[in-house]
Length: 395
Image (cartoon, rainbow, N blue to C red):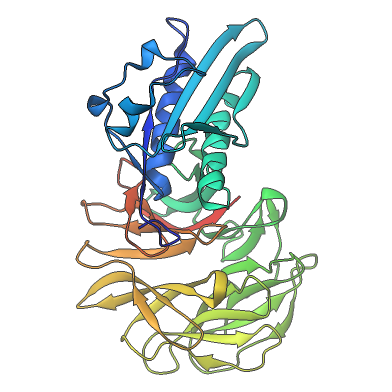
C-alpha cells in the first residue's frame, strides 16, 4: 500500500525516444524512474520483463496486449527533440487497461536547458501522482539540515527530496544548527557565530540578547517565531518577534528543560519536548500559552516532535536503547513507523504530509532517508554517511 493506503500501481516506463547522443535524455530517464520509485505509489516494472518493443511504437501507437500481459496498469512514454532554443520534451501517461492516454499536468515542455530538464521530469511525475491519487506530488521540494564539517563546525545544507542538488547555505567556520525553512525560502537557524547560540535568518542575526537559543521555528503565517531559550540554566519555550528579535512572551515557566518546539499547521498549538516528568516526553501547549498537557504516556525517552497534518506529531522514541520513529495523535494514540532497522531519529513531515524525512544508521553511518507516512516504504536519499542532524522539509 502507498502513502494514502492504496496498493502500489504497476507502471512501465519506456526509455525516452531521443536523437542519438542526446545527453539530457539520460537525466530525464533516471529522474522519472527514481521519482516514481520514491513516491511510494508505484511498482515500476523491470524493463527486462517488457514484451513490447518500445522502439517499434510511437507516442500515438501502442501495442496494448504486450503491456497488459506483463501486468502494467500504467505506461509512460517520453519523446525529445533538440532545437536551437533547447530541448522540447513530450511526456505521456497511458492507462493500459482502458487503452487510453491520461492528460497530465507538466506533460509538455519547450526549450529546456540546464536545471530545467530535471525540473520538467519532476513536474511530470508530480502530474502523474495527481492524475492517479487526486493530489500532486512534491518532487522538486527541498530538505534543509545541518552537517558536521570539522571538529567544532557544522554547516547548513539543502538538497532535493531525491538527494540531488545538494547546496551549502551556511558555512561560516562556526557551529550552525537546528535549521528550519522560513519566509521567502530563507532558513532560520541557531549559530554560534556571535560567540553564543543566537538566531539567524539567512545572514541576518535576529536575536541580540545574552540568552542561548536551542532552535526555533516560524509560525505558519510567518508572524511569530517560537523558540527554545536557555534562561537561568534551563530552557523554556518562548515567542520571539521576527522583526525585533525580542522575546515577547514565555509559554512555559517550569524548572525543567523544554526544547524542540514545533507549530501545528493551523498555528494554534505547539508541540515540544519536556523533561518535567523526570524523562523526556512530548507535550503540547496552545500558542497563547494555554492548555499545556503531556501527550506521550508510553516510552521513557521521547524527543524531537514535529507537527504534521490531521493533528499528528512524528517524534523519536527510544526502545531497548535504540531510537525509532513514532507518530502520536492528539488523543495520545501512538503508531510505530520504524522497527528492527537500526537507529532512526530526527523525523520531519513533507509539506503535503504524505512522507517523512529522517536520519537512519541502519547501514552503518547516518544517512538521510524518506518514508511514506505509514512507514511501509523507506528509501535512502544520500549515498554517503555523514554527521547529519535535524532535517526540515519545505517547498
